Length: 347
Image 1 (cartoon, one colour):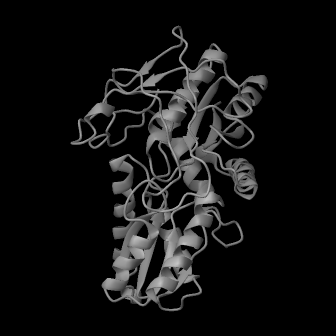
Image 2 (cartoon, rainbow, N blue to C red):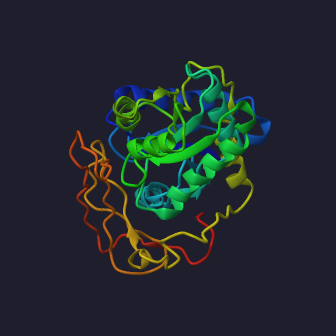
């Protein structure tokens, strides 16, 4: 039998961390009723910031005699966390537990079920008949992931325009343009007056809170009626098993055979104009406060010089209310390096 490991990024918001932990428990319960996606055990952990660390989740499975694990990244837009940080963290766990087999499933991505949840959040919004929707994602320096949010926005518009929504525009709360304020300004210029802002986030956290703050500020400045919708993973809403089933679908897909993803625009493989230096960049796992590892096992998408992944939650041009998070990384010269040589992202 194969176990399911759900991998989250982590948050400084305890409510968001608990929502993730509760979700892992729900997936475990749902797995008992899915004959097509049965797992002998379900565990979940974070790569940084929140307990439990991925190390503890894997150790829990190993202590139960589980040696075959499928990891599902609980991530909507596949940027550096999905492409580098999580595979690197899995490589570190394989080194810690010789004989452990890990397979890597696809992130949740821009899935029809996710678009369906966005439609439900729009319908449940306090804004009765919005002219427009601003779909707000995290934002990243990965152009491929940012483009996925644009795709989600288009799909949402294609499936809601009959309700009177004239525009669905994408925006980002960190790192990428347009910002929340810039997105609302564009909608105002297009003639929108009533806007529903939909966060493209699963659980509570610093960035979803920032979406609300930035939306309120821009609405006042622009004279718009703006309502911020509920999060995709909001357990208070009657969504049934949409998200739990999607995770189990990703798990079953990886169990059935090798999983291939579209790498045509992946900056770690393809020399995208302006991002050529990222091709073959080595990826390393984040430091977790509860996993003070003495070294890091590198993960490379092809080959190239060492590259320390650094990320911050600041949007260019907007005030940052907390310090940049810049993990300090070192590399053990004897650590295994995992290299991608083809289009599949699965070990």
